[in-house]
Amino acid sequence: MSSDRSTNVKSAVAVVGAGPAGLTLANLTLQSGIPCVVLERSSRREVETRPRAGVLEHRSVELLERHGLADRLLAQADRHGTCEFRVNGQAFQVDYADLYGGRTHYVYPQQEVVTDLIAAFIEGGGDIRFSVDDVTLHDLTSESPRVAWTSADGVRDEISCDFVAGCDGFHSVSRRSIPSGYLQELVHHHGIGWLSILAEAPPSTKAIIYSLHPDGFAGHMLRSSTVSRYYLQVDPSESVDNWPDDRVWMELQKRLSLADGSWRLTTGKITEKRILDMRSHVVEPMSYGRLYLLGDAAHIITPVGAKGMNLAMNDAAVLSSALTEYYKAGDETGLKTYSDDCLRRVWRAQEFSQWMVGMIHTSLDTPFQARLAQARLEHLASSKAYAASFAENYVGP
Ligand code: RFL
Image (cartoon, rainbow, N blue to C red; front, side, top):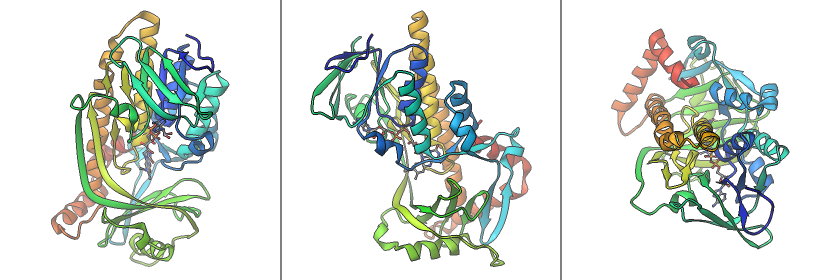
């Protein structure tokens, strides 16, 4: 099972995609002595500078720490245990860490997680190919599936392996290699859009803010001392062209403001502006023959509750344990239960995210839903038991 650079490589595991799922899996399997090759469509620079998530659950950090992959994260990440809700200009805070055994979130940008995982994998002797094109998967139900690709220098390469890990995100080529009709696709459109904004602006808050305003939800997320992310609820068919920077800042100030006028938003240079259509998508099962799907390739969730990257890393932990058992003892149990093991956590996160979507959004078309959202927030503000349940799900059970 060598993994030298050549056409027709042989390895134990071919990992398609170097996002949080693929890189976590690659590091964990490499540490167990299982050779793997990672194939990534983008350049190293692109994946190391792609801003997306920023909130890690304590258990994701514990996973990385157990494998010696969290040194820079632990030195640099901010720990958060409080979030703030605003309803019609009135604020209240939930100290979710206090309510759930002191467990906190870690705020550390996804591109930094990816950067650390790439460095660790290469340092450990791992084989990663960037800027590959036209990845195709073959013989997935045989004992030696194959993955072919065109490398950056235009050579068509192929790997023959024992297992393929499809970690290539929502538009996954791996998932699309499964014969149609095999997977059950469960999809839900929430009917809500978010204008997602990233700006070079120091945070105007110490805690994440979720604000329910008659004109729609607004959120203020933290990324670092110099960068912040914000969200504005918009119609899913909205165009970013309708949102010049001035309008973005005015709308954020209005929807996040406090009734007493005391709160001020710090502005800065907007570096990313895009519309997210709030939707959830899960495929079952998360495997086909010797292909295993991980992360966004198998399930996407709304950014509400900040679960996507954490679920991706959990899938990697589950698959890496299963592969380790298989190579150490020939035990296939973990591979057989992989899909069910991951889906339990996926559905729990989907349920929580759906509940939270309903709590922080208003819909001008259905005032009934808006009143329900307000009732939920009032319950959260006034009931310790309700807040404790929120805390458990939010920080990660
Ligand atoms: P990724 O990160 O999409 O990585 C997939 C990788 O596969 C590569 N690829 C291919 N490579 C080879 N051949 C092909 N044919 C390929 N096709 C694709 C891609 O270039 C890429 O490098 O999937 P992964 O690893 O499953 O990770 C999932 C997470 O990225 C995602 O769930 C999170 O970003 C979701 N999310 C959040 N999750 C959290 O846990 N906490 C958060 O705070 C949080 N905030 C967010 C988010 C997602 C957001 N967006 C952009 C939807 C905030 C936002 C705005």
